[in-house]
Length: 85
Image (cartoon, rainbow, N blue to C red; front, side, top):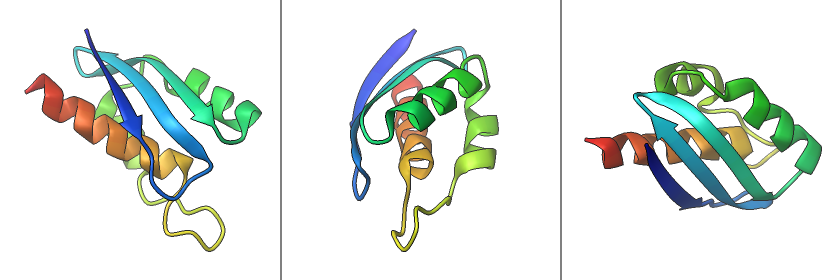
């Protein structure tokens, strides 16, 4: 099991705490941001393979911002994948 703490850029959520094992999401916690929505995203992706989450959420934007919390989550997952190599 591997855990990282990812500092986001350009979103209301400031930090994503991400735990994964064997290529799947074990746990996700967002600090800051829209609490209810981020709890929902966290619950929905638990148990999902990293690449499935990235395929669904990568590139999502928040209004006029070039990124979003789901997009930043994908970047955190990429970092977690690199840490497991």
